[in-house]
Image (cartoon, rainbow, N blue to C red):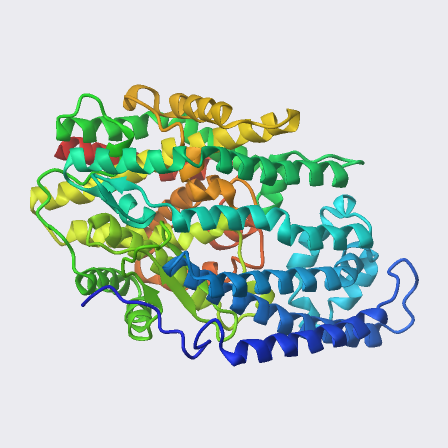
Length: 596
Protein backbone atom coordinates (compact mmCIF):
# COMPACT_ATOMS: atom_id res chain seq x y z
CA UNK A 1 0.00 0.00 0.00
CA UNK A 2 1.37 3.39 -1.01
CA UNK A 3 1.20 6.21 1.52
CA UNK A 4 -2.32 7.65 1.30
CA UNK A 5 -3.64 11.11 0.49
CA UNK A 6 -6.68 12.80 2.00
CA UNK A 7 -10.17 12.25 0.65
CA UNK A 8 -12.06 15.43 1.52
CA UNK A 9 -14.65 15.66 -1.24
CA UNK A 10 -17.47 15.47 1.31
CA UNK A 11 -16.07 18.64 2.90
CA UNK A 12 -15.27 20.57 -0.30
CA UNK A 13 -14.50 19.31 -3.80
CA UNK A 14 -11.83 21.97 -4.41
CA UNK A 15 -10.87 25.48 -3.23
CA UNK A 16 -13.25 26.90 -5.86
CA UNK A 17 -16.18 24.66 -4.85
CA UNK A 18 -19.43 26.73 -5.15
CA UNK A 19 -20.40 25.37 -1.73
CA UNK A 20 -17.60 27.46 -0.21
CA UNK A 21 -18.99 30.69 -1.66
CA UNK A 22 -22.49 29.76 -0.51
CA UNK A 23 -21.17 29.12 3.00
CA UNK A 24 -19.39 32.49 3.14
CA UNK A 25 -22.60 34.21 2.03
CA UNK A 26 -24.50 32.45 4.83
CA UNK A 27 -21.77 33.52 7.26
CA UNK A 28 -22.30 37.15 6.19
CA UNK A 29 -26.02 36.83 6.92
CA UNK A 30 -25.25 35.22 10.29
CA UNK A 31 -22.93 38.12 11.17
CA UNK A 32 -25.76 40.55 10.41
CA UNK A 33 -28.06 38.60 12.73
CA UNK A 34 -25.31 38.53 15.35
CA UNK A 35 -24.92 42.33 15.18
CA UNK A 36 -28.64 42.74 15.84
CA UNK A 37 -28.46 40.46 18.88
CA UNK A 38 -25.37 42.19 20.26
CA UNK A 39 -27.12 45.55 20.01
CA UNK A 40 -29.54 44.32 22.69
CA UNK A 41 -26.77 43.29 25.09
CA UNK A 42 -27.03 45.39 28.29
CA UNK A 43 -24.19 47.25 29.97
CA UNK A 44 -22.89 44.82 32.64
CA UNK A 45 -22.31 47.75 34.99
CA UNK A 46 -26.07 48.37 35.21
CA UNK A 47 -28.56 46.16 37.09
CA UNK A 48 -30.27 43.52 34.94
CA UNK A 49 -34.06 43.66 35.01
CA UNK A 50 -34.83 40.28 33.44
CA UNK A 51 -32.21 37.52 33.88
CA UNK A 52 -34.25 35.01 31.88
CA UNK A 53 -34.43 37.32 28.86
CA UNK A 54 -30.68 37.90 29.14
CA UNK A 55 -30.00 34.14 29.23
CA UNK A 56 -32.11 33.71 26.09
CA UNK A 57 -30.17 36.51 24.36
CA UNK A 58 -26.78 35.05 25.35
CA UNK A 59 -27.79 31.61 24.08
CA UNK A 60 -28.82 33.09 20.73
CA UNK A 61 -25.55 35.04 20.45
CA UNK A 62 -23.56 31.91 21.15
CA UNK A 63 -25.39 29.86 18.52
CA UNK A 64 -24.94 32.45 15.76
CA UNK A 65 -21.26 32.95 16.65
CA UNK A 66 -20.55 29.22 16.67
CA UNK A 67 -22.13 28.83 13.25
CA UNK A 68 -19.76 31.42 11.78
CA UNK A 69 -16.83 30.00 13.74
CA UNK A 70 -17.47 26.55 12.28
CA UNK A 71 -17.29 27.84 8.70
CA UNK A 72 -14.19 29.93 9.40
CA UNK A 73 -12.53 26.91 11.02
CA UNK A 74 -13.42 24.48 8.21
CA UNK A 75 -12.26 26.82 5.46
CA UNK A 76 -8.92 27.40 7.19
CA UNK A 77 -8.34 23.70 7.81
CA UNK A 78 -9.18 22.84 4.19
CA UNK A 79 -6.98 25.64 2.82
CA UNK A 80 -4.07 24.92 5.15
CA UNK A 81 -4.19 21.20 4.41
CA UNK A 82 -4.10 21.84 0.66
CA UNK A 83 -1.12 24.17 1.13
CA UNK A 84 0.64 21.51 3.20
CA UNK A 85 0.37 19.14 0.25
CA UNK A 86 1.49 21.81 -2.21
CA UNK A 87 2.94 25.07 -0.95
CA UNK A 88 2.29 26.66 -4.36
CA UNK A 89 -1.48 26.12 -4.40
CA UNK A 90 -2.59 29.74 -4.74
CA UNK A 91 -6.32 28.96 -4.62
CA UNK A 92 -5.79 27.26 -1.27
CA UNK A 93 -3.81 30.25 -0.04
CA UNK A 94 -6.68 32.57 -0.94
CA UNK A 95 -9.18 30.32 0.85
CA UNK A 96 -7.00 30.17 3.95
CA UNK A 97 -6.79 33.96 3.97
CA UNK A 98 -10.57 34.29 3.60
CA UNK A 99 -11.09 31.94 6.52
CA UNK A 100 -8.64 33.89 8.67
CA UNK A 101 -10.36 37.14 7.76
CA UNK A 102 -13.77 35.70 8.62
CA UNK A 103 -12.48 34.47 11.97
CA UNK A 104 -11.03 37.91 12.70
CA UNK A 105 -14.29 39.60 11.70
CA UNK A 106 -16.22 37.30 14.02
CA UNK A 107 -13.77 37.97 16.84
CA UNK A 108 -14.22 41.72 16.29
CA UNK A 109 -18.01 41.54 16.18
CA UNK A 110 -18.11 39.24 19.25
CA UNK A 111 -16.02 41.49 21.49
CA UNK A 112 -19.08 43.03 23.17
CA UNK A 113 -20.16 39.65 24.55
CA UNK A 114 -16.58 38.76 25.52
CA UNK A 115 -16.32 42.01 27.47
CA UNK A 116 -19.76 41.45 28.97
CA UNK A 117 -18.67 38.13 30.49
CA UNK A 118 -15.36 39.59 31.71
CA UNK A 119 -16.83 42.73 33.30
CA UNK A 120 -20.17 41.49 34.62
CA UNK A 121 -20.46 41.32 38.44
CA UNK A 122 -19.67 37.91 39.89
CA UNK A 123 -23.20 37.55 41.22
CA UNK A 124 -24.68 38.10 37.74
CA UNK A 125 -22.27 35.60 36.18
CA UNK A 126 -23.27 32.97 38.75
CA UNK A 127 -26.94 33.60 38.03
CA UNK A 128 -26.51 33.36 34.26
CA UNK A 129 -24.41 30.21 34.43
CA UNK A 130 -27.26 28.38 36.15
CA UNK A 131 -28.57 27.96 32.60
CA UNK A 132 -27.41 24.49 31.40
CA UNK A 133 -26.44 25.71 27.92
CA UNK A 134 -24.49 28.70 29.20
CA UNK A 135 -22.86 26.57 31.91
CA UNK A 136 -20.96 24.82 29.11
CA UNK A 137 -18.94 28.07 28.88
CA UNK A 138 -18.25 28.30 32.61
CA UNK A 139 -14.61 27.22 32.68
CA UNK A 140 -13.56 29.51 29.83
CA UNK A 141 -15.49 32.46 31.24
CA UNK A 142 -13.79 32.11 34.63
CA UNK A 143 -10.43 31.64 32.88
CA UNK A 144 -10.88 34.93 30.99
CA UNK A 145 -12.07 36.75 34.11
CA UNK A 146 -8.79 35.89 35.84
CA UNK A 147 -7.16 38.57 33.65
CA UNK A 148 -9.90 41.20 33.90
CA UNK A 149 -7.36 43.98 34.29
CA UNK A 150 -5.66 43.11 30.97
CA UNK A 151 -8.69 43.84 28.78
CA UNK A 152 -8.82 47.14 26.89
CA UNK A 153 -11.81 49.13 25.65
CA UNK A 154 -14.21 47.57 23.15
CA UNK A 155 -12.85 49.75 20.35
CA UNK A 156 -9.24 48.80 21.16
CA UNK A 157 -10.01 45.08 21.36
CA UNK A 158 -11.78 45.21 18.00
CA UNK A 159 -8.89 47.12 16.44
CA UNK A 160 -6.40 44.51 17.67
CA UNK A 161 -8.42 41.68 16.13
CA UNK A 162 -8.74 43.50 12.82
CA UNK A 163 -5.07 44.41 12.52
CA UNK A 164 -3.88 40.93 13.50
CA UNK A 165 -4.95 39.28 10.23
CA UNK A 166 -2.58 41.19 7.97
CA UNK A 167 -0.24 42.07 10.82
CA UNK A 168 0.56 39.32 13.30
CA UNK A 169 -0.96 36.44 11.31
CA UNK A 170 0.54 37.70 8.07
CA UNK A 171 4.05 37.13 9.41
CA UNK A 172 3.24 33.56 10.37
CA UNK A 173 1.78 33.01 6.90
CA UNK A 174 4.95 34.39 5.33
CA UNK A 175 6.99 31.77 7.16
CA UNK A 176 4.67 29.01 5.93
CA UNK A 177 5.08 30.35 2.39
CA UNK A 178 8.85 30.15 2.76
CA UNK A 179 8.64 26.54 3.90
CA UNK A 180 6.58 25.67 0.85
CA UNK A 181 9.00 27.12 -1.68
CA UNK A 182 12.43 26.32 -0.26
CA UNK A 183 14.26 23.63 -2.24
CA UNK A 184 17.47 22.45 -0.54
CA UNK A 185 19.93 20.97 -3.03
CA UNK A 186 21.14 17.64 -1.63
CA UNK A 187 24.10 16.24 -3.56
CA UNK A 188 23.01 18.10 -6.67
CA UNK A 189 19.31 17.18 -6.38
CA UNK A 190 16.76 19.91 -5.47
CA UNK A 191 14.03 18.62 -3.17
CA UNK A 192 11.35 19.89 -0.81
CA UNK A 193 12.14 20.50 2.84
CA UNK A 194 10.05 17.53 3.94
CA UNK A 195 12.07 15.12 1.80
CA UNK A 196 15.36 16.68 2.87
CA UNK A 197 14.31 16.47 6.54
CA UNK A 198 13.63 12.75 6.15
CA UNK A 199 17.21 12.25 4.97
CA UNK A 200 18.39 13.32 8.44
CA UNK A 201 17.35 9.81 9.52
CA UNK A 202 19.39 8.13 6.73
CA UNK A 203 21.78 5.37 7.89
CA UNK A 204 24.65 6.83 5.81
CA UNK A 205 26.32 9.58 7.83
CA UNK A 206 27.64 11.34 4.75
CA UNK A 207 24.13 11.43 3.31
CA UNK A 208 22.78 12.89 6.55
CA UNK A 209 25.49 15.53 6.60
CA UNK A 210 24.76 16.48 2.99
CA UNK A 211 21.06 16.88 3.78
CA UNK A 212 21.75 18.92 6.92
CA UNK A 213 24.15 21.28 5.15
CA UNK A 214 21.72 21.65 2.24
CA UNK A 215 18.91 22.57 4.64
CA UNK A 216 21.24 24.98 6.42
CA UNK A 217 22.16 26.60 3.12
CA UNK A 218 18.52 27.04 2.16
CA UNK A 219 17.69 28.70 5.47
CA UNK A 220 20.88 30.76 5.56
CA UNK A 221 19.79 32.40 2.30
CA UNK A 222 16.53 33.38 4.04
CA UNK A 223 17.86 34.12 7.52
CA UNK A 224 17.21 37.87 7.34
CA UNK A 225 13.63 37.21 6.25
CA UNK A 226 13.04 34.82 9.15
CA UNK A 227 14.70 37.28 11.53
CA UNK A 228 12.24 39.93 10.33
CA UNK A 229 9.37 37.49 10.92
CA UNK A 230 10.47 36.72 14.49
CA UNK A 231 11.03 40.40 15.23
CA UNK A 232 7.59 41.32 13.93
CA UNK A 233 5.80 38.56 15.86
CA UNK A 234 7.62 39.21 19.13
CA UNK A 235 7.45 42.98 18.66
CA UNK A 236 3.68 42.71 18.25
CA UNK A 237 3.37 40.64 21.43
CA UNK A 238 5.59 43.02 23.40
CA UNK A 239 3.62 46.09 22.32
CA UNK A 240 0.32 44.36 23.04
CA UNK A 241 1.64 43.47 26.48
CA UNK A 242 2.56 47.10 27.12
CA UNK A 243 -0.89 48.32 26.08
CA UNK A 244 -2.69 45.73 28.19
CA UNK A 245 -0.34 46.08 31.14
CA UNK A 246 -0.51 49.77 31.94
CA UNK A 247 -1.88 48.84 35.35
CA UNK A 248 -0.13 45.48 35.78
CA UNK A 249 2.32 44.31 33.13
CA UNK A 250 2.46 40.55 32.57
CA UNK A 251 5.74 39.10 31.40
CA UNK A 252 5.88 36.64 28.50
CA UNK A 253 5.93 33.59 30.78
CA UNK A 254 2.83 34.75 32.66
CA UNK A 255 1.07 35.17 29.32
CA UNK A 256 2.04 31.73 28.04
CA UNK A 257 1.08 30.05 31.32
CA UNK A 258 -2.38 31.61 31.10
CA UNK A 259 -2.71 30.53 27.46
CA UNK A 260 -1.61 26.98 28.31
CA UNK A 261 -3.83 26.75 31.39
CA UNK A 262 -1.03 26.08 33.87
CA UNK A 263 0.38 28.10 36.76
CA UNK A 264 3.81 29.68 36.81
CA UNK A 265 4.69 27.37 39.69
CA UNK A 266 4.01 24.33 37.50
CA UNK A 267 6.17 25.65 34.66
CA UNK A 268 8.99 26.52 37.04
CA UNK A 269 8.89 23.06 38.65
CA UNK A 270 8.78 21.34 35.26
CA UNK A 271 11.76 23.21 33.82
CA UNK A 272 13.75 22.81 37.04
CA UNK A 273 13.20 19.04 37.01
CA UNK A 274 14.35 18.86 33.38
CA UNK A 275 17.42 20.97 34.15
CA UNK A 276 18.40 18.73 37.05
CA UNK A 277 18.28 15.69 34.74
CA UNK A 278 20.00 17.25 31.73
CA UNK A 279 22.83 14.76 32.01
CA UNK A 280 20.39 11.95 31.11
CA UNK A 281 19.93 13.48 27.66
CA UNK A 282 23.67 13.90 27.24
CA UNK A 283 24.25 10.29 28.26
CA UNK A 284 21.77 9.18 25.60
CA UNK A 285 23.67 11.10 22.92
CA UNK A 286 27.02 9.74 24.10
CA UNK A 287 25.66 6.19 23.93
CA UNK A 288 24.41 6.82 20.40
CA UNK A 289 27.77 8.28 19.39
CA UNK A 290 29.58 5.30 20.89
CA UNK A 291 27.37 2.83 19.02
CA UNK A 292 28.12 4.58 15.73
CA UNK A 293 31.82 4.99 16.56
CA UNK A 294 31.48 8.74 16.10
CA UNK A 295 33.85 10.95 18.04
CA UNK A 296 32.39 14.23 16.76
CA UNK A 297 28.63 13.73 17.23
CA UNK A 298 26.99 16.53 15.23
CA UNK A 299 23.50 17.95 14.62
CA UNK A 300 23.05 15.70 11.58
CA UNK A 301 23.54 12.66 13.82
CA UNK A 302 20.67 13.46 16.19
CA UNK A 303 18.14 11.41 14.21
CA UNK A 304 20.44 8.72 12.84
CA UNK A 305 18.92 5.23 12.98
CA UNK A 306 20.37 2.57 15.24
CA UNK A 307 23.34 0.83 13.61
CA UNK A 308 22.71 -2.68 12.28
CA UNK A 309 18.95 -2.19 12.60
CA UNK A 310 17.36 -5.17 10.88
CA UNK A 311 13.90 -3.80 10.13
CA UNK A 312 14.91 -2.02 6.93
CA UNK A 313 12.19 0.12 5.40
CA UNK A 314 8.57 -0.10 6.52
CA UNK A 315 5.70 -0.12 4.08
CA UNK A 316 2.87 2.21 5.03
CA UNK A 317 0.40 -0.64 5.61
CA UNK A 318 2.96 -2.40 7.79
CA UNK A 319 3.50 0.76 9.84
CA UNK A 320 -0.23 1.33 10.14
CA UNK A 321 -0.76 -2.23 11.40
CA UNK A 322 2.03 -1.84 13.96
CA UNK A 323 0.37 1.26 15.36
CA UNK A 324 -3.10 -0.27 15.20
CA UNK A 325 -2.06 -3.40 17.09
CA UNK A 326 -0.22 -1.43 19.76
CA UNK A 327 -3.21 0.83 20.32
CA UNK A 328 -5.63 -2.13 20.31
CA UNK A 329 -3.65 -3.93 23.02
CA UNK A 330 -4.33 -0.93 25.26
CA UNK A 331 -7.87 -0.12 24.06
CA UNK A 332 -9.55 -2.11 21.25
CA UNK A 333 -11.58 0.91 20.17
CA UNK A 334 -8.40 2.96 19.87
CA UNK A 335 -6.97 0.31 17.55
CA UNK A 336 -10.13 0.19 15.43
CA UNK A 337 -9.98 3.97 15.19
CA UNK A 338 -6.60 3.74 13.40
CA UNK A 339 -8.09 1.49 10.71
CA UNK A 340 -11.05 3.86 10.37
CA UNK A 341 -8.68 6.82 9.86
CA UNK A 342 -6.99 4.99 6.99
CA UNK A 343 -10.18 3.63 5.43
CA UNK A 344 -11.89 7.02 5.42
CA UNK A 345 -8.94 8.83 3.85
CA UNK A 346 -8.15 10.94 6.90
CA UNK A 347 -4.36 10.41 6.68
CA UNK A 348 -2.11 12.14 4.13
CA UNK A 349 1.42 10.74 4.00
CA UNK A 350 2.54 10.62 0.33
CA UNK A 351 5.77 12.54 -0.47
CA UNK A 352 5.41 15.46 -2.92
CA UNK A 353 7.71 18.15 -4.28
CA UNK A 354 6.36 21.30 -2.65
CA UNK A 355 5.14 19.59 0.49
CA UNK A 356 5.65 21.27 3.85
CA UNK A 357 8.04 19.66 6.31
CA UNK A 358 7.01 18.19 9.65
CA UNK A 359 3.81 16.50 10.72
CA UNK A 360 0.60 17.59 12.39
CA UNK A 361 -2.95 16.63 13.31
CA UNK A 362 -5.89 18.95 12.78
CA UNK A 363 -9.64 18.50 12.66
CA UNK A 364 -12.71 19.87 10.95
CA UNK A 365 -15.32 21.46 13.18
CA UNK A 366 -18.34 20.08 11.32
CA UNK A 367 -18.32 17.20 10.72
CA UNK A 368 -15.92 16.74 13.66
CA UNK A 369 -13.29 14.66 11.85
CA UNK A 370 -9.54 14.59 12.54
CA UNK A 371 -6.87 14.71 9.82
CA UNK A 372 -3.25 13.54 10.07
CA UNK A 373 -0.40 14.88 7.92
CA UNK A 374 3.14 13.51 7.63
CA UNK A 375 5.62 12.55 4.93
CA UNK A 376 6.09 8.79 5.10
CA UNK A 377 9.24 7.31 3.59
CA UNK A 378 9.50 4.10 5.58
CA UNK A 379 11.81 4.97 8.47
CA UNK A 380 11.29 3.86 12.07
CA UNK A 381 11.05 7.56 12.89
CA UNK A 382 8.13 7.84 10.45
CA UNK A 383 6.37 4.98 12.25
CA UNK A 384 6.68 6.76 15.60
CA UNK A 385 5.54 10.04 14.03
CA UNK A 386 2.49 8.24 12.64
CA UNK A 387 1.71 6.95 16.15
CA UNK A 388 2.21 10.44 17.58
CA UNK A 389 -0.21 12.11 15.18
CA UNK A 390 -2.77 9.32 15.49
CA UNK A 391 -2.61 9.81 19.26
CA UNK A 392 -3.61 13.43 18.67
CA UNK A 393 -6.40 12.25 16.37
CA UNK A 394 -7.75 9.83 18.99
CA UNK A 395 -7.84 12.65 21.53
CA UNK A 396 -9.80 14.80 19.07
CA UNK A 397 -12.16 11.93 18.27
CA UNK A 398 -13.01 11.36 21.94
CA UNK A 399 -14.15 14.99 22.20
CA UNK A 400 -16.26 15.09 19.04
CA UNK A 401 -19.63 15.07 20.86
CA UNK A 402 -18.72 17.81 23.35
CA UNK A 403 -19.77 21.46 23.00
CA UNK A 404 -17.64 23.37 20.48
CA UNK A 405 -15.89 25.41 23.18
CA UNK A 406 -14.84 22.27 25.10
CA UNK A 407 -13.22 20.60 22.09
CA UNK A 408 -10.22 22.91 22.21
CA UNK A 409 -7.43 22.26 24.71
CA UNK A 410 -4.07 23.83 25.58
CA UNK A 411 -0.85 22.60 23.99
CA UNK A 412 0.41 21.24 27.32
CA UNK A 413 -2.44 18.73 27.35
CA UNK A 414 -2.52 18.35 23.56
CA UNK A 415 0.89 16.68 23.59
CA UNK A 416 -0.12 14.21 26.29
CA UNK A 417 -2.19 11.88 24.09
CA UNK A 418 0.33 11.97 21.24
CA UNK A 419 3.31 11.08 23.41
CA UNK A 420 1.33 8.44 25.30
CA UNK A 421 0.59 6.88 21.89
CA UNK A 422 4.31 6.85 21.09
CA UNK A 423 5.03 4.97 24.32
CA UNK A 424 2.37 2.38 23.49
CA UNK A 425 3.98 1.67 20.12
CA UNK A 426 7.55 1.61 21.39
CA UNK A 427 6.70 -0.73 24.25
CA UNK A 428 4.71 -3.01 21.93
CA UNK A 429 7.69 -3.23 19.60
CA UNK A 430 9.99 -3.95 22.54
CA UNK A 431 7.74 -6.68 23.94
CA UNK A 432 7.41 -8.37 20.54
CA UNK A 433 11.09 -9.16 20.07
CA UNK A 434 13.99 -10.78 21.88
CA UNK A 435 16.49 -9.92 19.14
CA UNK A 436 19.24 -7.63 20.37
CA UNK A 437 19.31 -5.57 17.17
CA UNK A 438 15.60 -4.84 17.31
CA UNK A 439 15.63 -4.08 21.03
CA UNK A 440 18.54 -1.73 20.44
CA UNK A 441 16.62 0.03 17.65
CA UNK A 442 13.67 0.59 19.98
CA UNK A 443 15.87 1.68 22.89
CA UNK A 444 17.49 4.03 20.40
CA UNK A 445 14.18 5.79 19.87
CA UNK A 446 13.80 6.21 23.64
CA UNK A 447 17.27 7.72 23.74
CA UNK A 448 16.41 10.11 20.92
CA UNK A 449 13.28 11.17 22.75
CA UNK A 450 15.14 11.70 26.04
CA UNK A 451 17.75 13.86 24.31
CA UNK A 452 15.12 15.82 22.43
CA UNK A 453 12.94 16.54 25.45
CA UNK A 454 15.67 17.11 28.04
CA UNK A 455 18.10 19.03 25.81
CA UNK A 456 16.44 20.37 22.67
CA UNK A 457 13.22 21.61 24.31
CA UNK A 458 15.00 23.44 27.17
CA UNK A 459 17.37 24.97 24.59
CA UNK A 460 14.39 26.24 22.58
CA UNK A 461 12.85 27.59 25.78
CA UNK A 462 16.07 29.37 26.77
CA UNK A 463 16.46 30.85 23.28
CA UNK A 464 12.91 32.17 23.20
CA UNK A 465 13.22 33.74 26.64
CA UNK A 466 16.40 35.48 25.49
CA UNK A 467 14.76 36.59 22.24
CA UNK A 468 11.72 38.07 24.00
CA UNK A 469 13.98 40.01 26.38
CA UNK A 470 16.28 41.23 23.60
CA UNK A 471 13.32 42.30 21.44
CA UNK A 472 12.11 44.59 24.23
CA UNK A 473 15.31 46.58 23.69
CA UNK A 474 15.02 46.75 19.89
CA UNK A 475 15.43 44.82 16.64
CA UNK A 476 17.33 41.54 16.94
CA UNK A 477 19.39 40.76 13.85
CA UNK A 478 20.04 37.34 12.36
CA UNK A 479 23.65 37.28 13.59
CA UNK A 480 22.51 37.99 17.16
CA UNK A 481 19.88 35.25 16.92
CA UNK A 482 22.57 32.84 15.78
CA UNK A 483 24.65 33.68 18.83
CA UNK A 484 21.65 33.34 21.14
CA UNK A 485 20.77 29.96 19.65
CA UNK A 486 24.34 28.75 19.97
CA UNK A 487 24.47 29.87 23.60
CA UNK A 488 21.18 28.12 24.44
CA UNK A 489 22.27 24.86 22.82
CA UNK A 490 25.71 25.03 24.44
CA UNK A 491 24.06 25.46 27.84
CA UNK A 492 21.86 22.39 27.32
CA UNK A 493 23.85 20.01 25.12
CA UNK A 494 27.28 20.83 26.55
CA UNK A 495 29.99 18.68 25.00
CA UNK A 496 27.52 16.01 23.81
CA UNK A 497 27.49 17.85 20.45
CA UNK A 498 30.65 18.77 18.58
CA UNK A 499 28.94 21.81 17.02
CA UNK A 500 25.64 23.60 17.36
CA UNK A 501 22.80 24.42 14.99
CA UNK A 502 22.96 28.22 14.95
CA UNK A 503 20.10 28.47 12.43
CA UNK A 504 17.67 26.32 14.39
CA UNK A 505 15.56 29.41 15.12
CA UNK A 506 14.98 29.69 11.35
CA UNK A 507 14.40 26.04 10.48
CA UNK A 508 12.13 25.23 13.44
CA UNK A 509 8.71 26.59 12.51
CA UNK A 510 7.42 26.66 16.10
CA UNK A 511 9.19 29.98 16.71
CA UNK A 512 7.17 31.55 13.87
CA UNK A 513 3.72 30.45 15.03
CA UNK A 514 1.81 33.71 15.25
CA UNK A 515 -0.96 32.68 17.63
CA UNK A 516 1.15 32.02 20.71
CA UNK A 517 4.73 31.90 21.90
CA UNK A 518 6.76 29.25 23.69
CA UNK A 519 5.57 26.27 21.67
CA UNK A 520 8.34 24.22 23.27
CA UNK A 521 7.78 23.39 26.95
CA UNK A 522 4.34 21.83 26.19
CA UNK A 523 6.24 18.93 24.59
CA UNK A 524 8.27 18.44 27.77
CA UNK A 525 5.10 18.67 29.85
CA UNK A 526 3.37 16.13 27.60
CA UNK A 527 6.40 13.81 27.58
CA UNK A 528 6.73 13.61 31.36
CA UNK A 529 2.97 13.69 31.94
CA UNK A 530 2.46 10.82 29.49
CA UNK A 531 5.15 8.81 31.30
CA UNK A 532 3.30 9.46 34.55
CA UNK A 533 0.08 8.25 32.94
CA UNK A 534 1.85 5.17 31.62
CA UNK A 535 3.02 4.40 35.14
CA UNK A 536 -0.62 4.61 36.27
CA UNK A 537 -1.56 2.24 33.42
CA UNK A 538 1.11 -0.24 34.53
CA UNK A 539 -0.35 -0.25 38.04
CA UNK A 540 -4.06 -0.22 37.16
CA UNK A 541 -4.12 -2.39 34.01
CA UNK A 542 -7.41 -2.45 32.10
CA UNK A 543 -9.12 -0.27 34.69
CA UNK A 544 -6.98 2.61 33.47
CA UNK A 545 -8.58 2.72 29.98
CA UNK A 546 -11.87 4.42 30.99
CA UNK A 547 -9.94 6.69 33.35
CA UNK A 548 -7.64 7.72 30.48
CA UNK A 549 -10.61 8.49 28.25
CA UNK A 550 -12.25 10.53 31.00
CA UNK A 551 -9.04 12.49 31.53
CA UNK A 552 -8.74 13.32 27.81
CA UNK A 553 -12.39 14.41 27.66
CA UNK A 554 -11.76 16.91 30.46
CA UNK A 555 -8.74 18.57 28.80
CA UNK A 556 -10.83 21.39 27.31
CA UNK A 557 -12.74 22.29 30.47
CA UNK A 558 -10.26 22.58 33.34
CA UNK A 559 -6.71 23.67 34.08
CA UNK A 560 -3.85 21.19 33.94
CA UNK A 561 -3.51 21.31 37.73
CA UNK A 562 -7.22 20.64 38.29
CA UNK A 563 -7.22 17.87 35.67
CA UNK A 564 -4.35 15.96 37.28
CA UNK A 565 -5.72 16.48 40.78
CA UNK A 566 -9.13 15.15 39.70
CA UNK A 567 -7.95 12.10 37.77
CA UNK A 568 -4.65 11.20 39.46
CA UNK A 569 -4.83 12.87 42.86
CA UNK A 570 -1.45 14.56 42.32
CA UNK A 571 -0.24 18.17 42.65
CA UNK A 572 1.92 18.90 39.59
CA UNK A 573 3.20 22.13 41.15
CA UNK A 574 5.33 19.88 43.35
CA UNK A 575 8.39 18.08 41.93
CA UNK A 576 7.37 14.56 43.02
CA UNK A 577 5.22 13.75 39.98
CA UNK A 578 7.88 14.93 37.51
CA UNK A 579 10.67 13.13 39.38
CA UNK A 580 8.78 9.83 39.14
CA UNK A 581 8.41 10.29 35.38
CA UNK A 582 12.10 11.10 35.05
CA UNK A 583 12.96 7.78 36.72
CA UNK A 584 11.36 6.08 33.71
CA UNK A 585 13.54 8.23 31.45
CA UNK A 586 16.62 7.11 33.37
CA UNK A 587 15.62 3.46 32.98
CA UNK A 588 15.30 4.01 29.22
CA UNK A 589 18.73 5.63 28.99
CA UNK A 590 20.32 2.85 31.05
CA UNK A 591 18.69 0.29 28.73
CA UNK A 592 20.15 2.09 25.72
CA UNK A 593 23.61 2.23 27.30
CA UNK A 594 23.45 -1.48 28.09
CA UNK A 595 22.36 -2.44 24.57
CA UNK A 596 25.00 -0.39 22.76
